[in-house]
Image (cartoon, rainbow, N blue to C red):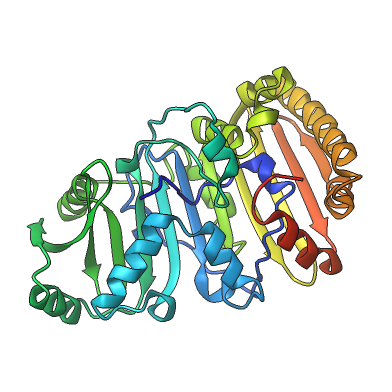
Length: 344
């Protein structure tokens, strides 16, 4: 299995051509679901699947954004009578607070799916909410002689192992929730839930960002400093190697992104900096970087360059925001040529 997650970098979103449909009232990630995640999560993301399915580009979105591990879960679940495409309503995920930045390789540069951070694979947890029949799934799993174990009174169904021998499992805390991840991580999650111990909450590092973003867009991601840096390094390795990029990364404390589409694509990135001076530096570097990128892409990808020139960078105290709107007529062209990578 390849090490691929949902992670999307803030800088990358300035140029991404993903199209999402924003409903009149975006769904929210509930406090109950949030509390299942560990308090030290370094990245949390959410996708309102019912809204995303309205996009004419939903099929390509799934192909490029859905991690290999969850695609494998989807195929495995189907053999047990679960059709995630029909039964799931929304999805969220979290990656743990510890992480390491691995050097970019030719393989990571060539990936068609954002390779995201090289956080330890054991820290990924995905929660899929919808309508399920746990008893029927367990019956099929037993009939197929699939390994089923117990943790805190909940059945965990084995979903196979990765190339390192790490076992992945899924479980149903209730009929509306499917939780997927490494065995040890899910066992800890179930234990915390059974004991009533706090997980991710408003008091967590990402709490304020989640509170500000949740419910306002069909897809959003919030990241702490480490995961913001990793995302940028893996999605734009050549840019990340520049001295100015390192200056920008060191000044950013956390980030949040959200995307919506009415008729045009609207992308919004918020960068929270360590202080006012750092924010001023980030805004200047960001504006210069976008202008340079637009010039570099003007010949071989004029639509992409035009989209970049439309980026508005705003500074407010220790907070930097970037907004990008791509006209509807350009969205399909950009998506076909760029996919979901920062490339010419």
